[in-house]
Image (cartoon, rainbow, N blue to C red):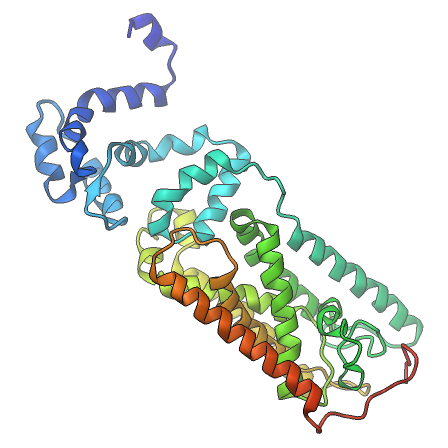
Length: 381
């Protein structure tokens, strides 16, 4: 390359050319092996004349390469690691957002294989709008009923005030109106209930949508809502149910499964930067426990200190969470599929179906439910 051509290259391109000219011969010697063995990487680089890396760079290279745990380093990986400090400047604003989402969803050991593919091929079509749409719908329904309740002399506060007469809320006396097993997610008891649900589903749902597409996340979320109401109908047969916690906890279940199964990989490198720290397993687990614990605590409080019109159950949290654990395996896209995961897919799917069938049969044959309310929808009394 001529000096004139070199002058028209930016700093990143010059750095890549320099790295290639100095270090590619090392990787060419090991091309048939799939990369340079990490155990001999330092020695081989020092043996090449003029190719000795600064001590800090070498330590960084070995530390980050070891995160992938494959024992070898390919030339492409070497370039990405050595230019990591400047790589983000070549990404568009949307790609940077996608990269943050990938850091929060894909285990670190799978990012090696999939990060570049997603950054190059993800086109935001369809866009991640499911969680946004559901959240706006929940806000709209909440505002509508808050205004209506105010006209009836009932104030909506932080932890009280809900339209017990709504055709959307789950009521055990009107179980024959099957849509209530899903639509109860649009009703919330006080604005704190709504805020907690919105924070959780947007924080967990949007990154999942960007990686797994909206229909997979929407499917898990919706079935988590249904599983939550069915579980509630088994555990708490006389209590109404409101809130999107079934769907939120389905997302939590899917996330928690990934955190637990990939704890080691998600903990490595958490001190490398802000994004790495935020997406690390301890931080994610802490956020899940804090937000989930606060929301569940509020639901339990409301269950046993309900207003004069009745109390609202909390068992949907656990039903949705269990559904998320099972459906996350079955429905969400598998980033790095392993042979044994096919067996796990079948096991989780069968368990979910068995539990759903049991709950449906319980609703049909259990004699302890309140008498059915056959009055026209929707009586306020």
